[in-house]
Image (cartoon, rainbow, N blue to C red; front, side, top):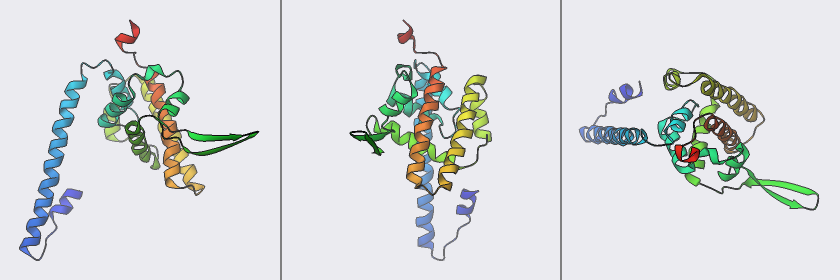
Length: 204
């Protein structure tokens, strides 16, 4: 619908119209380039030992193929984390603590660990500002996944959407809300990875 609206736009001067059409062509060229690169990634991941985790993570709202493969490539084997809290800490999504005697004060996020994975989680967390629902694209991604993976993903969506809505209702800043949602999203990612086969090298 948006592209149809763009195509209907007309300008009074021919030179303006020409520049506008060039802008649209450039966007289409970039989209085609992204599609080609994504196709190559899809082919490359087929024989990857961590491919099952990449597939399973796409059950989560806000995590499509590029997000899933980025997270797995940056984090590596998620089975190496004994608990979701350790993964959250590794990603730098936990608040820093300042202790003095009997007092403990929590500060900003530590932002340690892998910045690319943390940024991808933050980006994905924005999707939970909308009400929980399973759209067509999400249903298609989930079609071939086991029921227990889909159940974890739906639990994540209902919980995180409610959390986003609740925190927004308290007047918290959007950046803090997204960080809190991303932190819990990391926990659900850990849970889904725990329910997928470990890489063969780990099982040997």
